[in-house]
Image 1 (cartoon, helix red, strand yellow):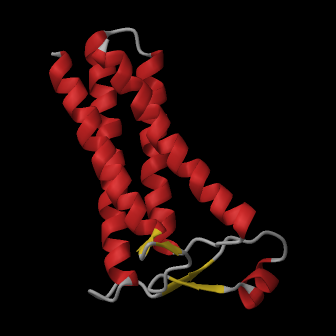
Image 2 (cartoon, rainbow, N blue to C red):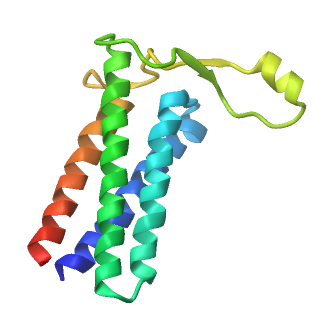
Length: 153
């Protein structure tokens, strides 16, 4: 029972995070910076691993895939924490800006691409940025899922 719940959460957490990010981007025009993309990549990896856990038949393989998904969720949370620190100017980031992904003429895309700064929070709620919420939510979820897996042994 706990393995099934951990598999379910391992799918729902990154899927929910990605859905939130995509709604923010396409519904509210909040273009992601480079560090936002890093967080997304970790959630995509977690989602693929967690879906693999639903396909796998062997209990050991399922447990391993869920553990790897938990690790990817935690990595996204840690990147989010680092990104939030950059946004709050607690430390300097590895990069200061990036451009959004555009299609069409490559030269035109490069010349007219908006610059999205990593050190400026595009949105906050109660003083916490999206990266901060990703940190809190992802690390909490990773701890809960890990606890479920350990309890199920």
